[in-house]
Length: 438
Image (cartoon, rainbow, N blue to C red):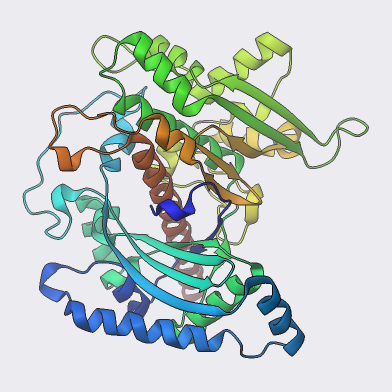
């Protein structure tokens, strides 16, 4: 992830289907199909010039004058391919490595993904910059290599039911650090030039935000697990500080009460982890998730019962089978609980679950909001700068654990976008099948 995105709120938009022409600029194809670097640079330069020329079209003169007064003249427009933005998030995000799942022996992949080193997730990107005299706007399109976003078994199954090209399998996200007008111009350029048919804001539900939080904490914990207990505690506190939840109500439950703010130390995750971890590296069945544990802790300390934290853990559901009703256009009120759980369904339909939702989660490392997007914080980067958080790896493979966790968060949003699109497509196919039968 680019350093320029830190310490600024970035709006996140989902691109469920990446057209082939745009995919060629964003993602890295297999070695045998890669274009000549000079040819790709020429394409990027051509798009930069075309996008710059399109900025002034179909806009009133007064808007152009106001923009020039505020930003100055446009000095330069650049399009840059962000190649090899690769990390090791897969090891951190595999369900069997989370507390509550028995660890499995790592199985080597013999040529399963020839273009994805060891099958690890590849976060590819395209950076677009509008450099004005007084400010700089940026757009980042990130995608995950489609061949590593699916396991070998799932790729085989998918190919039997719906043969498709790699580019058709790709989903992406767009991070915008710009004015609303510039963002509108950029999305229009994508639609007109690359035939991008669908772009919509990412509005995470309560369970999605809890999922990303638990993954984030697990990534930081795994990276620092070789430290002493006191060192782990101190590092966790320094990097993450406290976890702040903003719980909003769809309608006031009391006069003037529209939201509740709750803050807990991030080291509460360590307490929970130690309570569920077994000497063998797994844990006992039926233990509470971190979110459920938090709900109990908050109730014990304050008497406040937050039913929204009682939702079933969505990590396994999102990894294997998303819940029903989670459409790309549903907005922030959809739920991601396991679709085969009647208990979860009842909880989601209960008045308490419908009344309250998590609208914001914030730590010293990042903030995610249902309305305003993402904010990654450089302070957390500096808290671990220069430390080796991965022992036994080559120097060039060592990575700041915060950067890794941030990339993992982006990968999780891309994966959610792809799954939402796949589910919509399956609903369409199911509907066509029923129509044919009748």
